[in-house]
Structure formats: structure tokens, C-alpha cells
Image (cartoon, rainbow, N blue to C red; front, side, top):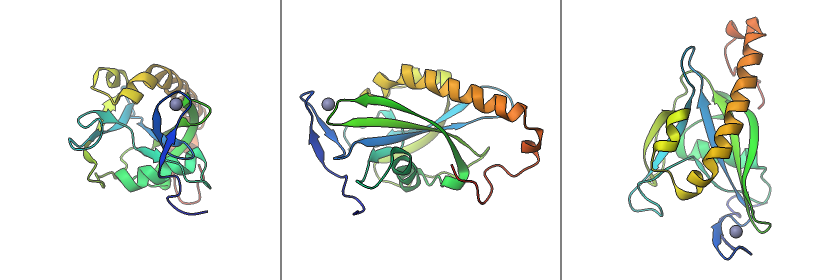
Length: 183
Ligand SMILES: [Zn+2]
């Protein structure tokens, strides 16, 4: 196992090239306020990168030893500073599976006010966007294609999360995502 061994292009049977020799993964981080709709964390791609000026999720190539979840969490930490401690993973959704290559979305709910910051030159801005408004942003083409299915899955995940929270009153007195929580 070598860190970064997933970096590279795949010549896919679909006729396109994709980034990530072992596939790729991204993180849909959701923040759930006490009231009102949930927000999704998006990053604006810098003008000089591929598809610059579009909004995307933190993510990137999977290394050979990584699951989609570990790849997405690593990328989220590298790109926006989100730590696993600030996030609980609630689900996964495969946005594309071409046989030779796939892209998995990992869906997580963050602590109420996670510390985030732009940490890569490839990104210009981070923004919490209400889930229902994401589709009206100029999205990266791959995210635009995946968004209807990803949004449905995210809303299912949120529904289960909120139901769990409602039936676990002690959760409100416990520090969310405290030490020792795993995924
Ligand atoms: Zn393909």
C-alpha cells in the first residue's frame, strides 16, 4: 500500500478518461440546523483547474488500500479541513459505475458548526448551501449528473438521522461526535 497510488488516469471502456486508478470518492457533508433545511458543503473550483468556476464536493482518487469512506474522509480533511471527529458517516451512494472505474459518494452529517477552511489552491471558496438550492448552482458536470439521485439518497439519510435523533433524547446532552465515536 502506497499513499497516493490511486493518482492517475483510467482509460475507461465508456470511451472517456477518468481520474483515479482505483476509482474515486467524494464527500457530501450535511449540516443539520435545529430548525430549517439542511445544508450541504460545496467548494468552488478555482478558475485555473479543470471545470474551474463550478461547484463541487470535496473528493478525489481512491488509493489501492482505501475504502470509498476512507478516501472521501481523507480528501475532505486535505481539502476543507473537516476531521472524522466532526462528521458521522451515514451512507454511501454510487454515482457512476463503468466497470473500469466508479465514483462513490459518501454521505455524512457534521457537528453543528464544524471548523472548515479552504486548504487547497484548487478551491476558491467553501459554502454551506441549502440542499434544495444545490441544483440551481453551476455544478461540476459530474455532480450535476449525479445530483438528483444523490439528493434523494441524502434526504433518505437525513430522514433516518432525524428520526434517530428524535427517539434518542440523551443525544442532545451528549457532545455530538465526541472522542471515541467511529463512523
Ligand atoms: Zn467510464
